[in-house]
Picture 1 (cartoon, rainbow, N blue to C red):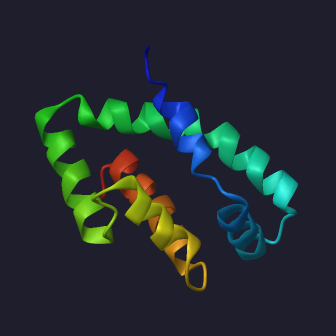
Picture 2: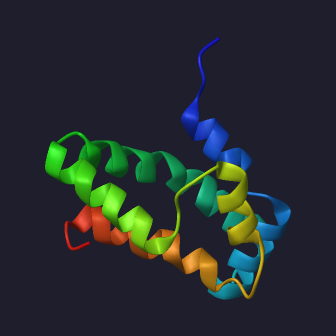
Length: 103
């Protein structure tokens, strides 16, 4: 059976994570969930594109390491689902830095 990484990533958008993200952006949880689910494939495409070269892959690993988004997925989602919600901004900054080549 093939694993769909995009669906797997979407499965980590728990109600708690969605609620914190919606508060941060000032939108309803429903709108926030829809936006995050819509953005997930584009984020993956950008990461795959970046990781397709040795220098891009190195940069991606470095940025993920610097933001602490490494390790078992359970630990990462615990981090995203706890605290004030500030943790939710790190993935956005990470993706922005990696995809723009400024990270």
